Length: 155
Image 1 (cartoon, one colour):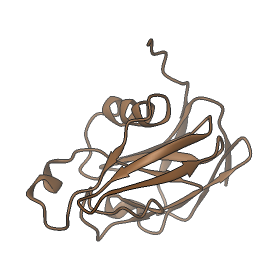
Image 2: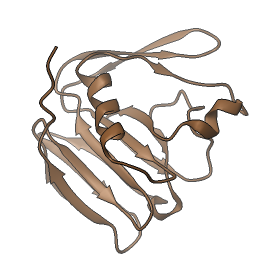
Image 3: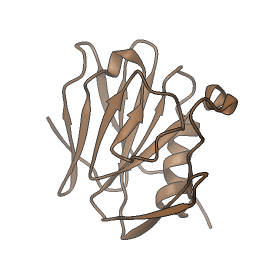
């Protein structure tokens, strides 16, 4: 299903968790920091920046994380597999033209930006950028989807 987006957010809510999705809005060099080095991935204005709170929690940090990436160029930090800090990441982020939600992966350890750790209720969900919005495919029945306006943040 297609959802139009300008500078706002699409929020997909399940019984215990949520996903937040926004457009990148501009050409953006996304820096991905790993133990081995740095990878730079280019984002187009219609590409997506998505955040997930696999364990639930407040929505505000997820929206702020999206804004830090898309408006302020915050680099993404990828932890090595089995890093003890992974379990303390309440919100994780991914960016690109298509993002699939995976439930059996460890938070914060995937440099591949086409996958995002999510709660079981989002298994099989795929987000795709389309001109002027986002296409949502799959997911379990009962997910609620709403649009929120963009955050008004100063410099």
